[in-house]
Every structure is written in C-alpha cells, then in structure tokens.
Image (cartoon, rainbow over all chains, first blue to last red):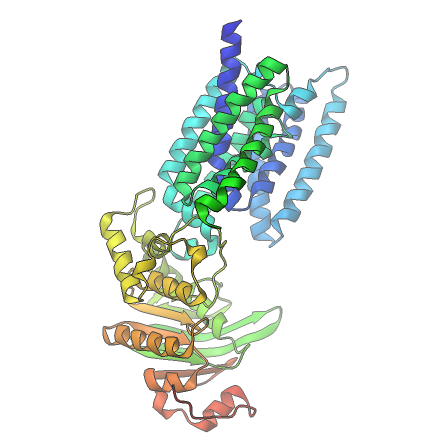
Length: 264
Length: 242
C-alpha cells in the first residue's frame, strides 16, 4: 500500500520538477504554445501505438519528436508563422488520434487519465523513465546553459556570434518532446502545458537571473507537487489538477511580492 | 580587406542592389551613405551573412565571407535589436555574448572574459551599469551596451548600422570620436550614417549608395554633385555646428 503511494509521490515530484526545469526556457523563447501543441499531438501517437499494439511510450515519443522537428523545419524552410504550422499539426494530430482510436473496435481506453493525468497509474518502469529524464534535463541545461541563454535572448544574434543555434535548438525540441511524452501519464495532456508555464512566470516575479529562475521554478514545482498530492490524499481530489491550481496560487502570491523584489 | 564583386540583390523581383563592386582596405574608417531604401542595411546584412548571396561574391581577407565568418567575428552594432525587455540578463551578460564564439561548446565564461567585458563597457562609458538589468537601460545606454559587445572580442572589423540612432548630438560626436580612436588603433570601420557633416569630419572613405554604387572615395572629395546624385535633387546641403 505504502510502496504504491511512495511511487505516486515520486512520480508527481519528478514530472513537476522536469517540466519546471524547462519552464523558464520555454517561456523566454515564447514556445509555450509548442508545449501545449506537442501534448495534444501526443494523443495521435498514443492512438497509433494502441492501434498497432506497439510500446505506448516509445511510439508516442518517436511520433512527437518527428512532429516537433517537422514543425521547426517547416517554419524555417517555408517561412511560415510557427503558430500557424503548430495549429495545423495540432488539429490534424487530434483528428488522426480520434480516427485511429475509433478504428480500434471494442477497445476500452482510459482517455481521462491521459487527458488530466493520474499519478496513481504511473508504473515502476515509468518512474525509471522520469528519473532518466530529470537527469537528462539537468545535464542539458547545465552543459548548454550559455548557448541556451543566448538562443533564448535572440536566436539570430546568437547565430551571428557563432552559437550553434541549429544543434542546440534541435536538442531543445527533442528534449521538450521527451518531457511532454514522459510526464504525460502523471501530468495529463490538458494540464502539462500549465506546468510548463506557471513555475517560470512565478519565478520571474521573484528573481532577476535565468539560472536563479530555473532553480526557483524547480523549487516552486516541488512545493506545488507536495501540496497538490497532500490535498488530493486528504480531500480525494485529482492530483494533477491540484498541482496546477497550487502553482497558480503561488503565481498570484508572487505578483504581490513583485513590487517589493523588483521595485516595479 | 573586404572585397565585394558584381553583387546584386533582389527582394520579390525588386532590385535592391545592382552590380556593386567595392573594396574596403584595412585601416579605413568608411561611411556608407544614401537615402532610405538605398540598400545600405541590405549590403551590411549580406557582408555579415544574415542574408544569403544571390549573385556576386564577398571575400574577407581573401576568403569567401561565410567561410571567414565560421572562424572569425565582425564587431556589429545593429540599428535595432529585437529583444524582450523583461529578459533576465544584465548588461555584462549581453556584452559577454560578443565572446561566446571564442569558447568551446558547453564551457563557461572565466574571470578574464568578465574583465574584458568590463573593459569594453569602460571604453563605452557605462561600466557602472554592468550589473543592471537590460530592461532598465535608456536608448542611448542600450546603444553603448551593444557597442561594447561589438568591441569586446577585439575584432579587426567593426560594422555599425546608424549608430547615431537613440543618441543626442553631443552623444553622436563623442561616439564618433570614440570610433576614430578605435580606427587609429587599427580597427577597420564601416558605418551607415546620415550625418554628412560628422562623416566628413571623422571618416576617411565615403561610399555613396542608391541601389547602385555612385562613388567610393575619400570623404574630403565628395562634392555636392555626388551628394545630389546619391540622394536625389531634393537634398539641400547646410553647414551645421555642434
């Protein structure tokens, strides 16, 4: 019984932590809509894996990475507005997902746990995936910090000053896709994008540096995950939704402190 | 030396630059003048590799410019740089951007890099703002921050796109005096400007561009006739004192 609860707590912590590490970069690069789109695109990946009876997480991961890179490539190659390309892929992927699921006759699919997340459904192997993901995130952000900083500031000028923008951006997109797919079971398709934005916008009200913002986002997310899990345990409420609501409360509180800290 | 041969450039079928041939020798302080839409910024963006070549070639120190730019940097002060004013960066962070190409992938800035950033900021007169957030700077201070970034890596070439934007007249004069010092120290400078009086005072070489190159000669030799040819008949030359 307790092992089951510990597993769920660890899943909530790790998924919130991983998303929060990426949160300031996603927000500053103004690609938070990409996070939302990829979580919806994952739905088609899930449906494809179910229909073809393939490994669900791996198939979804590959599918989402391919679509993320396609969006990036199409936007640059054909000078399309990235938001337009994303909207096209988002809608088509949702339509594809619904069609594929309906083709799988007689299959009862627990869509709700994917839409809203359910930490109680996270398996032991998914916990290992979450641990590897968190370590990868820490390594990527620490190693490429300087490059990510300037890429987020202004990609064109970063390229001019010989930052390998193409390489870093591709790795960023792959890891963003991985974060969304691997945390999907715990965070949910609908709520994952909130966890990619709220910790960052809260931290930016409190600190003035990107590295401080990454650390404080992670702390805010862990605090929200603890509170969210406790609330769901005591009041029998959905964990993912509680975590997002608590992150929003922290954001509102940070707004009160912003004038004191930033003098604005 | 920056050498441009038979360069033409079109946007949506409209000719922006036509058969430009130009050689900018080392040690020059050159100014690029011309009316709005003459192709000045386009020419600079082509030299810097922001735009792909369509016809013609650009060589820097005898090497095709894109090859040269893979291993070297040109100090560049843009006319306008798009950035989020809430971006959590200090003035020093942005100046350090000028050194990022010197460091291997994944490595961190060292104390020596930070000292160079402070030296560049001291040179442009805003060292006291090194720790300030970029969003708190005025237009003139931002211009000096970007100039410090262009200077920090001690490149042999410096290209400026209307550096007088956001500066008042005494500010323009002190900026050009600063550029003259850099030029005397050996830097080759190419600047876009509209201020003919200040250019004739400080620059050694004037390039008159209006889609085609009208002249490239020493600043003292530019006559009213060439100015009219470049800018059109509507321009009126007046003497100006600071």
